[in-house]
Length: 133
Ligand code: AMP
Ligand code: ZN
Image (cartoon, rainbow, N blue to C red; front, top):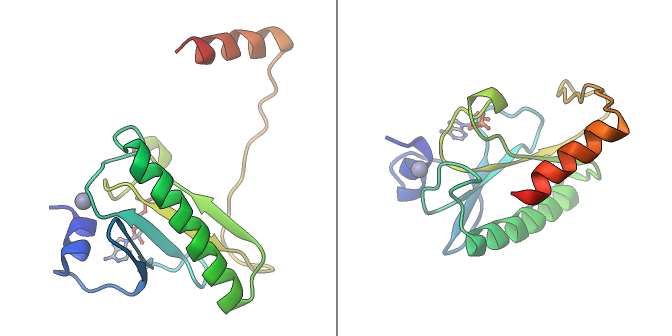
């Protein structure tokens, strides 16, 4: 059972912000910050690796539309757009979704990138590996 598929089918209630034929945007039940919204494709894709090109294009445009709606309505200019894939990346619902998280002065949401400096050689080796794939 996929909780987001159940929401899409209307079997579990949700707070819909935006809907079209391909996707649904609704308030996250746990508001990391006020206005925290999820955008999900109506078709079940587990993660970014399963997502097809058309849905990917469509969904990111909807993220843009919803981010603008949130920005205007809640008067926020700062927003994080996040997507978790897999256990190590903290994906807890295995139906692809994008988080829109408005940011406020002194809010409690924490996103921290650790610094990991590589040498030029290491960067070039890494680049080659990724570009070859
Ligand atoms: P992730 O950890 O990236 O997989 O995010 C899953 C998100 O789904 C979490 O932020 C949850 O709070 C949210 N969530 C789980 N169940 C529901 C629900 N029934 N309605 C709205 N959001 C939900
Ligand atoms: Zn699903």
